[in-house]
Length: 149
Length: 395
Image 1: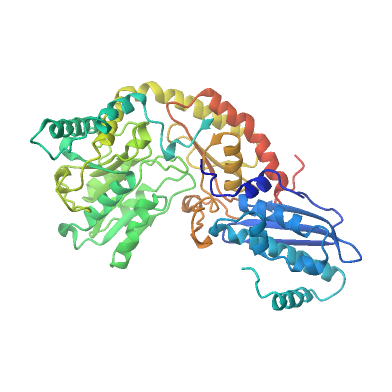
Image 2 (image 1 turned 180 degrees about the vertical axis):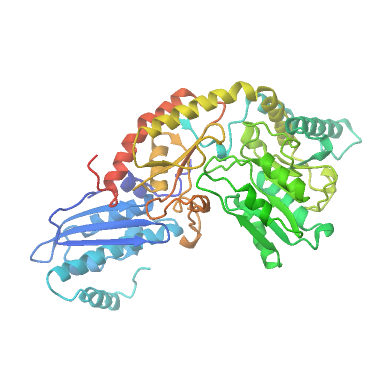
């Protein structure tokens, strides 16, 4: 029997979302919305003095793919250094989920953007220019021309 | 399992299937082959079905054209009317904002050909304004096409009143009655219509058979040209088994509708009342009273329709959603994910609503199925609310 439009991995993360919730004391919070379909994604990070993501949570108002993308994204960045977190592309989220329907790729892009927004918030709270995030991403892209969408 | 997506197609009646089987197996004659019994049997079976469908609609046999689906009936009504040489100078069409895509999309071509389309607005309950209809009909109006009942929000228009206006103005009137036939009495004379679409799958018949009622004297051109079947209005070898099934389904609906519709309405009321008391952030869509029997539709703040639909499905409850995300999931592009124009038309705020849920019942819907929804929905909603960044309540 056909499994339907979503992979088993997507269904697993939809039914059992990892790291769902909020971090009251988060030192990095990012929220993005997709006006096309009304989805909203919010990412909470706890980043320690060594620049390592020690805790991550998400909240999502969206479809199955949006929930699964947020859940998978949090799994992929937990315990990683900020530089590694910034290297996460939407493509790696899609691959880790065993694929997404073409019309739902934007959900993985939203997850990448929510993490980026959280890191901008992190630098801003530290009194630094948040545009450092864009520069760091640029450099990562130069080093890895593969990239995402 | 609780199957509450009957607007997508009902379970065929066992008696319908029984009537169809011989025409799938041994009675495989082509109705156009009159010179041997096998063909004549099929010809007579189609004739009987035509009579049954005509009786179902209060029409004459010659006024029934068999097609393959509701979409085809709607396309034949529109294109057949607009392309007829007698209406070549009439380049204005009136529809409502909440018509099915099989009415809205064919008209895009006509816009490009210089036609003007007036889309009547609906109020928050989904009803058009009859006075507004009167005011927009012009000398060059070729056709008015307004659906009988809306599959997404359940609202039933005052189709007979619309028909009176069209009669007075001398304008051709088409009704898409795909949703409603088999659950509400449809009489083409009471409705004052010239054209009317129905589909067998919506009243316990098979997929693959539908019909367009064409009032005697109304001139149409065909969309499919070929061997002149269906009085030249719909060429192509008839799907005899499906047509036979449609005839039987029409007979059963005509004879038994009064027996099964009250129970559908009772279950509809039960579900409606249970949902009313469930959450204060659930909002019903459509008209509170003028609704298709067994139709319950709503949206919930903070919760996206596809997610809710998926969780219902995981719990064995099958429904439909008018959310952008579930609109065209197999599309190649996110551009093809379109928010429901029906929800927009009835003024649902898109900043808090991301899709509605529609439960549609049938004569087979049981109390247990409705109870399953009432039992499972609170847990699913709680789960999705906890996940939603928009939900900040403590209740």
